[in-house]
Image (cartoon, rainbow, N blue to C red; front, side, top):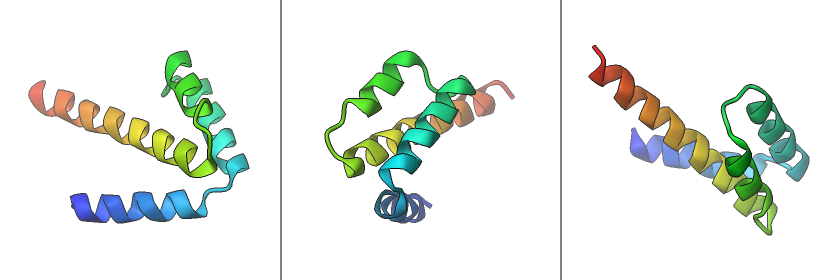
Length: 74
Protein backbone atom coordinates (compact mmCIF):
# COMPACT_ATOMS: atom_id res chain seq x y z
CA UNK A 1 0.00 0.00 0.00
CA UNK A 2 2.84 2.39 0.80
CA UNK A 3 4.28 1.94 -2.70
CA UNK A 4 0.89 2.68 -4.25
CA UNK A 5 0.49 5.84 -2.17
CA UNK A 6 3.99 6.90 -3.15
CA UNK A 7 3.19 6.38 -6.83
CA UNK A 8 -0.05 8.32 -6.56
CA UNK A 9 1.74 11.14 -4.74
CA UNK A 10 4.41 11.28 -7.45
CA UNK A 11 1.75 11.44 -10.16
CA UNK A 12 -0.06 14.23 -8.32
CA UNK A 13 3.14 16.22 -7.99
CA UNK A 14 3.72 15.89 -11.73
CA UNK A 15 0.13 16.76 -12.71
CA UNK A 16 -0.84 19.58 -10.35
CA UNK A 17 -0.33 23.05 -11.77
CA UNK A 18 0.75 25.84 -9.48
CA UNK A 19 -2.79 27.25 -9.58
CA UNK A 20 -4.15 23.81 -8.59
CA UNK A 21 -1.78 23.63 -5.63
CA UNK A 22 -2.73 27.13 -4.44
CA UNK A 23 -6.46 26.51 -4.92
CA UNK A 24 -6.26 23.21 -3.05
CA UNK A 25 -4.17 24.80 -0.31
CA UNK A 26 -6.71 27.57 0.23
CA UNK A 27 -9.63 25.13 0.12
CA UNK A 28 -8.00 22.88 2.74
CA UNK A 29 -7.32 25.92 4.94
CA UNK A 30 -10.92 27.12 4.57
CA UNK A 31 -12.15 23.65 5.57
CA UNK A 32 -9.80 23.70 8.63
CA UNK A 33 -7.81 20.73 7.38
CA UNK A 34 -4.68 22.88 7.47
CA UNK A 35 -3.76 25.57 9.95
CA UNK A 36 -2.09 28.91 9.14
CA UNK A 37 1.40 27.62 9.93
CA UNK A 38 1.01 24.63 7.61
CA UNK A 39 -0.35 26.87 4.87
CA UNK A 40 2.59 29.28 5.21
CA UNK A 41 5.03 26.35 5.12
CA UNK A 42 3.60 25.14 1.80
CA UNK A 43 3.46 28.67 0.36
CA UNK A 44 7.09 29.23 1.34
CA UNK A 45 8.41 26.48 -0.91
CA UNK A 46 10.29 27.77 -3.95
CA UNK A 47 9.00 25.52 -6.73
CA UNK A 48 5.63 24.16 -7.77
CA UNK A 49 6.92 20.62 -7.22
CA UNK A 50 8.09 21.44 -3.69
CA UNK A 51 4.77 23.11 -2.85
CA UNK A 52 2.81 20.14 -4.19
CA UNK A 53 5.05 17.64 -2.37
CA UNK A 54 4.82 19.55 0.91
CA UNK A 55 1.03 19.83 0.63
CA UNK A 56 0.60 16.12 -0.16
CA UNK A 57 2.98 15.09 2.62
CA UNK A 58 1.18 17.29 5.15
CA UNK A 59 -2.26 15.95 4.23
CA UNK A 60 -1.02 12.34 4.20
CA UNK A 61 0.55 12.78 7.65
CA UNK A 62 -2.69 14.21 9.01
CA UNK A 63 -4.67 11.32 7.51
CA UNK A 64 -2.26 8.80 9.02
CA UNK A 65 -2.52 10.41 12.45
CA UNK A 66 -6.30 10.42 12.21
CA UNK A 67 -6.38 6.73 11.32
CA UNK A 68 -4.09 5.89 14.25
CA UNK A 69 -6.30 7.89 16.58
CA UNK A 70 -9.46 6.22 15.29
CA UNK A 71 -7.95 2.74 15.67
CA UNK A 72 -6.80 3.47 19.24
CA UNK A 73 -10.19 4.82 20.28
CA UNK A 74 -12.03 1.63 19.30
